Amino acid sequence: MKIQEIKELTVEELKKRGKELRAEALALRIQKAAGQLENPARIRLIRREVAQIETVLTERRMRAKAGA
Image (cartoon, rainbow, N blue to C red; front, side, top):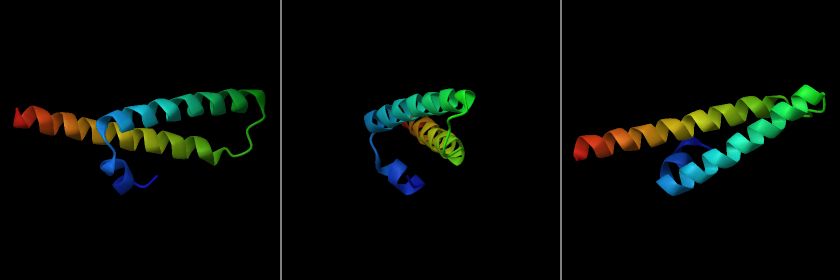
Protein backbone atom coordinates (compact mmCIF):
# COMPACT_ATOMS: atom_id res chain seq x y z
CA MET A 1 0.00 0.00 0.00
CA LYS A 2 1.40 3.37 -0.97
CA ILE A 3 1.73 6.22 1.52
CA GLN A 4 -0.87 8.29 -0.32
CA GLU A 5 -3.38 5.45 0.03
CA ILE A 6 -2.54 5.20 3.73
CA LYS A 7 -3.13 8.93 4.22
CA GLU A 8 -6.59 8.62 2.67
CA LEU A 9 -7.76 6.04 5.24
CA THR A 10 -9.70 7.00 8.36
CA VAL A 11 -8.24 6.58 11.83
CA GLU A 12 -10.36 3.47 12.44
CA GLU A 13 -9.26 1.93 9.14
CA LEU A 14 -5.62 2.70 9.95
CA LYS A 15 -5.88 1.03 13.34
CA LYS A 16 -7.57 -2.01 11.82
CA ARG A 17 -4.97 -2.29 9.05
CA GLY A 18 -2.14 -1.92 11.58
CA LYS A 19 -3.60 -4.71 13.70
CA GLU A 20 -3.93 -6.98 10.66
CA LEU A 21 -0.34 -6.29 9.59
CA ARG A 22 1.01 -6.99 13.07
CA ALA A 23 -0.79 -10.33 13.09
CA GLU A 24 0.66 -11.17 9.68
CA ALA A 25 4.13 -10.15 10.85
CA LEU A 26 3.80 -12.48 13.83
CA ALA A 27 2.80 -15.35 11.56
CA LEU A 28 5.77 -14.65 9.28
CA ARG A 29 8.18 -14.56 12.23
CA ILE A 30 6.86 -17.95 13.35
CA GLN A 31 7.31 -19.32 9.83
CA LYS A 32 10.84 -17.92 9.74
CA ALA A 33 11.70 -19.61 13.04
CA ALA A 34 10.33 -22.89 11.70
CA GLY A 35 12.30 -22.51 8.47
CA GLN A 36 9.18 -22.41 6.30
CA LEU A 37 9.24 -18.78 5.19
CA GLU A 38 8.83 -18.51 1.42
CA ASN A 39 9.22 -14.74 0.98
CA PRO A 40 11.56 -13.17 3.57
CA ALA A 41 11.24 -9.74 1.94
CA ARG A 42 7.57 -9.65 2.98
CA ILE A 43 8.62 -9.13 6.62
CA ARG A 44 10.42 -5.92 5.69
CA LEU A 45 7.47 -4.64 3.65
CA ILE A 46 5.07 -5.28 6.51
CA ARG A 47 7.33 -3.54 9.02
CA ARG A 48 7.60 -0.55 6.70
CA GLU A 49 3.83 -0.32 6.21
CA VAL A 50 3.21 -0.56 9.97
CA ALA A 51 5.70 2.28 10.49
CA GLN A 52 3.97 4.40 7.84
CA ILE A 53 0.59 3.80 9.48
CA GLU A 54 1.95 4.73 12.90
CA THR A 55 3.50 7.88 11.43
CA VAL A 56 0.22 8.97 9.86
CA LEU A 57 -1.65 8.28 13.11
CA THR A 58 0.89 10.31 15.09
CA GLU A 59 0.68 13.19 12.61
CA ARG A 60 -3.10 13.23 12.96
CA ARG A 61 -2.90 13.15 16.76
CA MET A 62 -0.44 16.05 16.76
CA ARG A 63 -2.57 18.03 14.33
CA ALA A 64 -5.67 17.44 16.48
CA LYS A 65 -3.77 18.44 19.61
CA ALA A 66 -2.51 21.65 17.99
CA GLY A 67 -5.99 22.49 16.73
CA ALA A 68 -7.67 21.95 20.10
